[in-house]
Image (cartoon, rainbow, N blue to C red; front, side, top):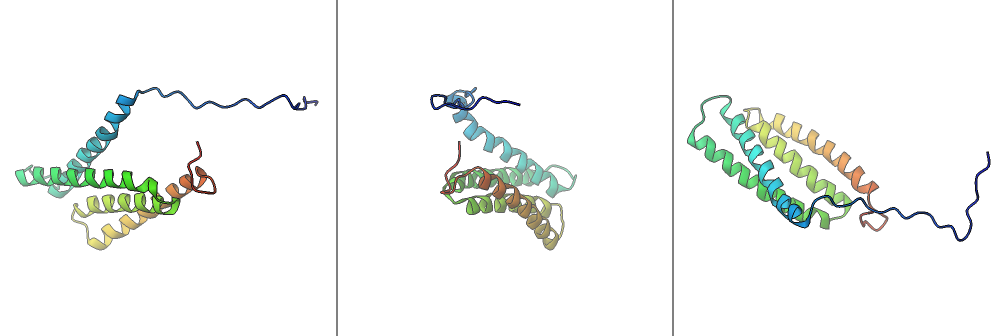
Length: 147
């Protein structure tokens, strides 16, 4: 099979990034709405785990909202701090956050601390492997994101 050889005047086509479907306002709203929604779901989940199917009480509702507020604050802090770190630290911070979050949920079911810690370490290790691979393959040699 014959194939045309490139000539000096022939340049490869530049790839353009995909268009941004949402506007700047939508991104600003989503930047705060996503942590709040995820935090409320997490707080409800933790409160449901703690009561073990029993009646909903005022203390249980308070526990859910306090848990949601702490989760939101930590999520926003990790999201702000993680991109400033190198790929190892970036992956480690997110995996520690995920491991602690799942470990806390499991602990609320009444499981032992050792079981909760073991599951949290397994989840954190899985998150670290996936995130490190993602950051490693999406950065150049200097650690800058490849776009």
